[in-house]
Image (cartoon, rainbow, N blue to C red; front, side, top):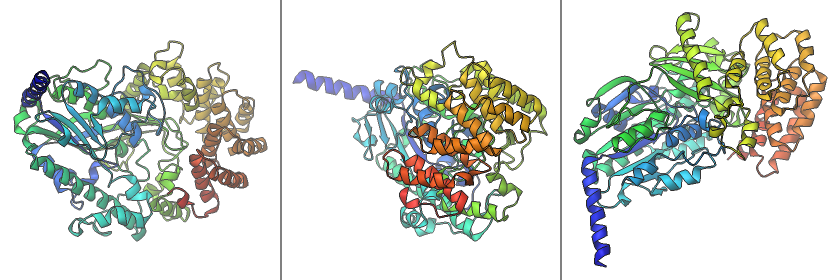
Length: 628
């Protein structure tokens, strides 16, 4: 008994000593919010006094970026410290496994003596999530917090606030938003429909203002809830010993931003408040603003550096605070991939406030035809306004095919209204070259079709697959980079690649041909020769192209595809029909699919995808009740 008491006393003394030299660390994380909707970033209408207060005594980052534009890939990169195009977790709601060597970074804090708690979102986007949670957290629940640690034990605590999430700001029905947000927000913090300026890419109408006000009130409520956590920190006497990080998990959760590879989707508000006790660990003084570039893969090494824990070599980021810092990189690289049933592959390279964006599937548009977007009243209003010709050119761009490459200065043009590709050719060449070289060097695993990546994941993790020398990553990038080029030379190369022995090369050739705006009948005839490709994604894309050009056999192909029991084939077929010129040809079959999927477990994504397609063909109301 005496020995046990001695061990406990010794442990508590160790925690006390460590606490004196190592900081407590607190994350307060909101969802789906761009800097333009935070007070300390210049918005004078939103009510964010607690976030603004942290900035007034801390450091505010003007060039902080999420690694993705939707929540689960973003959280995958945060918890692992590894880019999603290396782990294969870039597709929203994926089940890609991680090798055992990749851990949740809080595991190293925990093993070094920290009490780690998560309240309470995980959403790590991998089949290895349970292992990450188990290794990372002493507690992960709605009741988790620093208050459950041993006396004197240093802590790392995370709190996530969902009031600003896209579900509240646009997707949930308005009456549910009232219950979840307005009824919870004190009257003096509420923002009215006519209090703010509309972003230029949304029509300034009463209907749209009613929806945009949801963003302001969601962010205001999130700040109000952050205040409760900070009040408890103060009441527990821990403010002077705790470094507080505030950030959003990615940019604004509104049409054309979330799930879209835009600068506003990547750029996030990011503030760190460091108490005087630990001022030596920060290169910035109180109340400062920095242009230093940081991204979410920098969080893991930075927290390990602050805690004086050895940083694993495989982490992609760098520590920008603490005892083991690294210099700022020349560029940041970020990515956006599939969301819901909508494939995508967008990559961007960032140089301060400059962002070069490359869309490898430019036949789609920024808003994207996915149910989670279209179920929002604001999206339906935009679609009605677009169809009735009520949108100006800037607003209509949300529902038109995007440029395959874009260059923006986010400091001068935060809403990305002016594509500067033609004005800065040397910068474009430099940043484009850096991006494509990075994709080759890092072996961007999402160049592999998702269907194949899933099958291969039964035997090898995507992270390990990248190491295979049998895959010609340089060629895959070369063929993918043809997508969007609108010239005959690009078409001829894409047609030639349809006969390549590697199915993934053929896949990118087919996507590039889908993005071509003007194919001749001779070229269409050549595509018909390859329509029986043994690689299913290639086959579906080629049939989609033929369907665009009135091929009757393609209609029959999609009739059969929509009745298939292969969910992946059905999902991809629905996606191609969303962007088809003749989608109305399949209305009866899509309606049958909706009914079939409605009665089947595990077919909800197909049901909702069919629902959106029916809505777009007929204008019939969406079946939103099936979503809720």
